[in-house]
Length: 472
Image 1: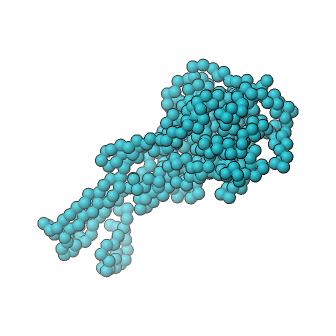
Image 2: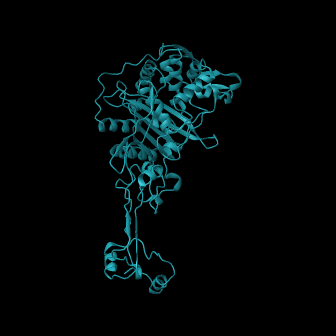
Image 3: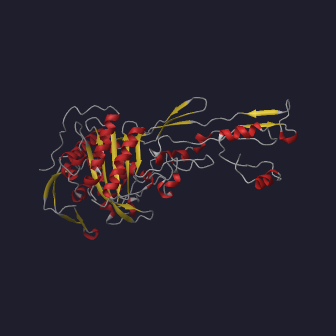
C-alpha cells in the first residue's frame, strides 16, 4: 500500500526507536485502508499544507513557508510567531502494543490557532501593477523594477510590486536572491525625485518661493567640487523655482539649495525619511545611505541637493511624495492593517504621524509638481480627467559598500493633485532602451495610477491644473 520495499519496511518496524515515520504525504484513501487493518502501533498523523490561491500575485510580500510550516520570507517570516499558534498535546496511559488504556489517565491540551493577519494590499490592484511592471521590464530589457501604491491619508501600502514575483506555491522556481522584496532591500540614488526635498526646505526656510527668479547658466563652477551640468546643454535660462523643478535642473537646485547650511540640508533629508528604514514590516529592509553632514566631502554637500550621494529604497522615496500629498504630514507606511487574535479580538494598526513641513509649503510644492507633468519632464504621466503632480528621476544604484552601480530611472506622482489620495512610484533598475524616468517609468505610473483611481472609485478632478509660471 505504501509502495515501500518489504525488507526495508520490516527492518524499520523491528527497530529500537519508538517513533518512526514510514512515509509522508500519503493519500487519504491509502491512509484509510491501512487504518482498517488495525495494526497495533501503526497510527496516522494529519498534516496541513499552505496554499496560495493568487499564486505569484503579491508573492514577494506574502513570502512562503518551508516544509516545517515556518515562514521563510515576506510576511510569513516577519509574523511567523503570530501566525503559527501553539501546538496541542495529549498525554495518556498505554498498554500492550502502545494501545490507549480505556479509563486510564488521559489529559488533552487543545491547540491554539494562530492569529489572522489582514494586509493593506488590494489583490486586483497588485495584479494590475505587477502585469504593467513585468511588461515594462521586458520592453526595456531592464534588470528589474519595483512599484509602490501608497495611500497618503493613512499610510496603507495598497500595492508593493517586484518584477518577476516569486510564486509561494513553488518558491524553488525563483532564484533565492529574488524571493524577497527588492522594493525594500534595494538601495538606489533617488536622483531628481529628491529635488522635492530641496524645494520644500528652501520654501520652509524662507529663502525662496515657487515664483522666485533665477538666471540659470549652462554650467556651475563649484571650485574644488567641480562643475555641475544639466542633462541637456543650454545657455542662460530664466527660470522660476517652479521652472527649475519642472526642467529638473541640477544647476538650479544647487543655486537654491546652497543657500541652506549643510546641517539644514541633512536635517530635511532626515525629516523626509532618508537614512532610516520605514519599518513597513518586511524582512531585509535597507536603511539606505545618509551620512552625517560633517562627513560630507566638498562634492557631496552639493550632490545631495539633486539626489546624489544618498541612497534610499522604493518606499522611502515614495514616502517623500506621500508627505507632500498629505499636507506636509508623514504617515508611516505599513502592510498590516490589523491582526485578529484567536479569541476574535481585532487589533487595528495605528500608524505614527509626523509633521515634516507646513501645510502651506506642501501645498506650494504640490502645485510646483503639477508643472513637471504639465509642461516639464513628466508629461507621459498624464491621466485623462485627473490632475497629476510628480517628478522624474534618473540616477545610479548603490551597492552595500556605497559604490555606484547601473542607472535607475523613476517617476513618482501624486493623484489626484487637487485632492491627494495616492502616491505612486515606478522604479526601474538598469533599463537598456532609455535611462530617463520620464520615458521609461512615467508611462507605467500612468497605467498603475489610472487603475488605482478606478479601483478606489476616486472621482475625476473638478478643475484643470493651474500651475505656477516656469519662466520669467
